[in-house]
Length: 277
Image (cartoon, rainbow, N blue to C red; front, side, top):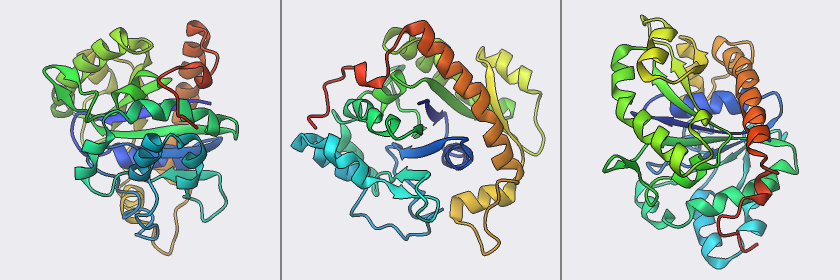
């Protein structure tokens, strides 16, 4: 199992990029919406067909009741018309719910083995990074999940404006992953192309972080992922989804290499307080 977490310095391309990765994954996948500002796949890509009776906010209740382990899978919904190879844990329905997540984020990581046993990779949409006094917030942001991810991708618009905006976030992520996570080598860039842009190596050099993936200019597919596909459907032959599929090769390779170096025996061995299930 590979766990890849996507974050951003500004709101924007993270949800579309996360959804593209989940839908184009070579293995079965689960998209986990952990953005404290609220999830958008339920209302966007799924066009409101999933009600608010399931999702991340309900898992907060399960954590406090001590039964997250038995409840986790019940809050997954299908992204592929019931086939079950592409699943979603819908995010918060209201940003006000984020205050109830303090102390809950760290309980999600020990739940990943439920997905690993069923052959799923995990894509985490962690939204815009929350920083307090130069540090990642551990109360109003899922920093605990980033610290145990195999790969953390910072989605950056491929422009110098985007790169400069990412500077403070890069510094906070590097420090947090080095001091509290599994190492700053988990960090990479996902460049999202603008109509005109500098070369990828200019962005990587400015931020001192390697580029792991690049998504090209594909507004039609991006619109379908953000608002739901039209009657023409959504095809894996589209530019964005082809690039998302290709991105899994370096992501999976980095995750495997890091696990081998760290000698981590799977996520079940990570003790972050247990799930109580």
